[in-house]
Length: 364
Image 1 (cartoon, rainbow, N blue to C red):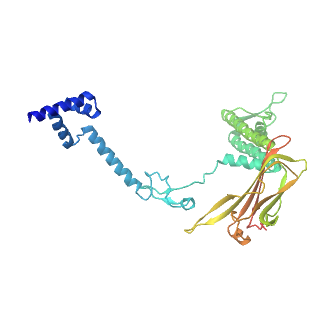
Image 2 (cartoon, helix red, strand yellow):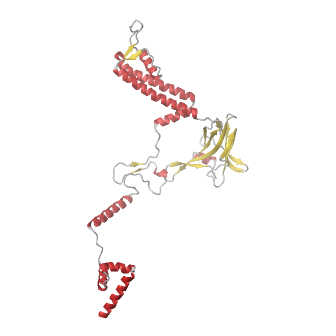
Image 3 (cartoon, rainbow, N blue to C red):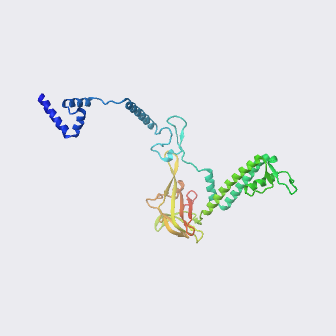
């Protein structure tokens, strides 16, 4: 036994002197003691890992929070109750407008993705798009509406709120009437500032200042519409009444024509786009509109004048392949032509868009 112990001690010393990685770790633990090293290694191999109280509590919290998250995720495909995650395996059209119950209770959640712009933006865009005569008539109507609205407000303090200008003798011509108040409101709206009546009371002066602010905002709006209309270039393009499905160079194709109203009109860097829109019915009820950009024979042109024909060949890769006129009407098909370019003389952007609807008989 003594001989075996001596040999073992010599072998352990040799390992520690060589600096082997395993011997270094064992040397730190046992200080190169042969008997103690074996006993300590056995104890560490059989001893369970101890956790501090803080780590134990932290692991318990992680486990509980993980179970809670797993339960919420498995609850009918919802997330944490905010209702922003759509149900998997369904199309966007099926999820649109669907009401779902919150997993934590409360009122049902509705998915609404048709956010509309503000009334001001819609009104501004409509005034830019409408004809010049209609826009001018609408502007005059807004100004007149402003005048009459403030006349009604001024009539609240008609007796003590206004005073007529005096004549050369220093006497007033007559009492204040509705005509005088109307002229004052009109002069304030047009920023002329000349009227037979003058506001003298605190109420009338405050209302007059409010009207001046409203008029300035209204004039800024009208000025914006005016300059936006002037900055837009009217290419003067007209489209054919019908979109025709026939043969072009011996191949079935969809053809639409456009024509410049003035021969002097020339567009450069022109891009053509033809969109096919139709209604798709779902098996579980409901529908949605699908849009496809059709591949054209020529999608770009360096210069365009007089007019031209936009052609889409109907082959096996075309979404129109196998469609008849009755199918297009049943799906409420619509073809939209877009022409985008720049006017040659001013280099201002020019845009032309026209629609052909199968339901209206525009596709032949």
